Length: 311
Image 1 (cartoon, rainbow, N blue to C red):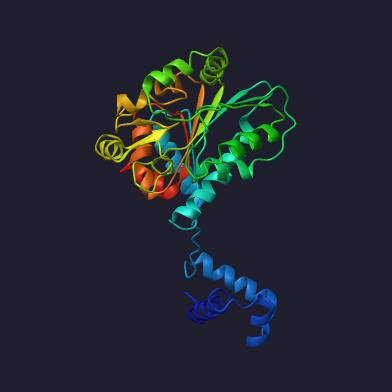
Image 2 (tube, helix red, strand yellow):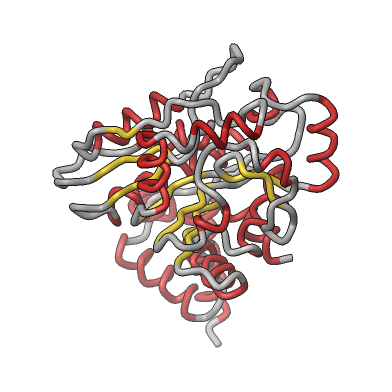
């Protein structure tokens, strides 16, 4: 073994990799030729003095996606790399990836059902204009709120419609009625009944999950009293399209469910493609419950959430 050559190659490798000097700069510093620098760098790698490791977060993401898909029997899973495990960063990352996924997978003639919520609003901002034809956009749940808190349901519906050259089909009602009998009477109206039926017949549904925390959007909208909120905290893990469900994905509170206007949980299971866009530590139980109950067959999330879902 050439001891001097080993020392020279290690010295050059340190200058190149540790001090970020170019091969030309190293050649001038050591008063040797540039080809000699190149040969000694290759010598250092060949003899194991230099080991290059590339951490590819996207490769890990693909592995996580495969594991999630298998564990929860999904049609597809997309795990987007988020640079930090904070909710704003996670939400932005998965919303952008979900928009790309939707743009790629929607085809002419598709009927798309959309929900509302903060993640859905972020997603809608990343959608790109499409040249597709005969696409329908149907709101899956009531979009009217009596609270000062803006659900942005109308903006989300309009954005989807503009992107896909479609006329939006709005569900101009409260998402949760005060009285079950009033809700039941309203949904018998021919116009409302038609919208609800179209929602059940979509080719693709896009939604997120809500949580059962005081800070959750649905808890802030004024539809639920304090007793009902406490009841949901005890029995529910989340909501999809404002339908609260338990850790098995079943209806968590029948009384509230009976007052809710929009697509039913069982109806979601019959839709060909149901895309759940969600991530964040506070949503893990809600996502797990939705996947366990078969409420979604396509998940778009981040690597931190994916890892937690596998535990």
